[in-house]
Length: 465
Image 1 (spheres, rainbow, N blue to C red):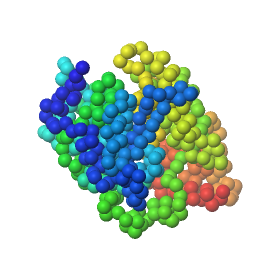
Image 2 (cartoon, helix red, strand yellow):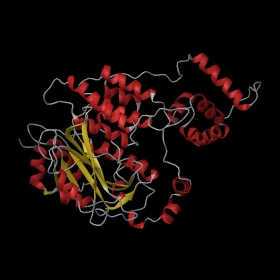
Image 3 (cartoon, one colour):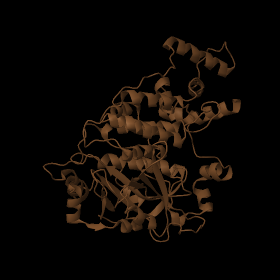
């Protein structure tokens, strides 16, 4: 059975082999050589979900290092299993955000592409209208026909180092660019909440490997390599990457000069990157919720949100989270939930299988992905309870806030006008696991004010502990 996206792309562009595709992303000499270790050189990572089963019934998942020879790419294209890879190099064998070192391309998943009367009208609109005629969307280096959708790859002329501050800006750029790609006439969606925003570490089905429909993903060369400045020109000013250097220019001394806070925290002090300290109760609660309430059309989003919550609840903290959620526990739970989700299937074209699980698990590694409450509710198909005062009535909540304010000021008889800094400190003392957005909403303070005093309040709390 043909694929309308592949047929159209084949008419106008040159198809590339999987080897040519990954050589375009990882140029010769960029990755480690097989069996050799060179400081400053890293590997790509690919994942294969095999048909083999472990004793517990969970599919056997294999992880492979992609080295300079790209032999792993050739091997995986010969299998009939679900395989994915991100255009990023990693230190070690774990494909985590903390291990990510350089981004070689920004990839955007384009789903729900319009098909009208058997014609790929959404793809035609994307290319002829939004890219060629209007110039609203940058021209991708490659377009991959992934089965039911498309993957747009913007390959950088030089790889970008994934320091934490750069990664945050890259995520903002990708979010803005994804919103444009999921534009009018391209996709069939009811709301902007249907746009599939994904993290910069997201892995994608590898060209040459099997799709859900049983065909093979195919890659087409559609443009030149890009620079970050090129992509910056297509997004709003607040979404641009402004603090970056490229791999060839980067040395440890240069990193110290450009990113002094990162260098002091990660290199000098040896501290880990920023982490969440949230109780696993959130994860356990959500797992119960989706087992009871998930429905067809929402199953993937329910599981993806579980992955996000697993990351948030995955860091050990003796006070807030003494029993963290591990990646292994998340995988085990997701495959067990998969069996239940599959029982809900009511259409032969809409089974819930291992590929869906692996897609959902990607959110665990994409720690910059953030979805607001209303988006989670919309995509998962049921409401989330609101409990900003930890179950207290408003009058009791105000009394407690006043008491904490007086304790912080060391004077129970003080009734003067408190400062904005006090407001932030009081709110944080009352909401140790709270976020800035909730503080802004509850206190009525401006965003700049809360951000200004947030670190001060946190530091004060650490000194008192």
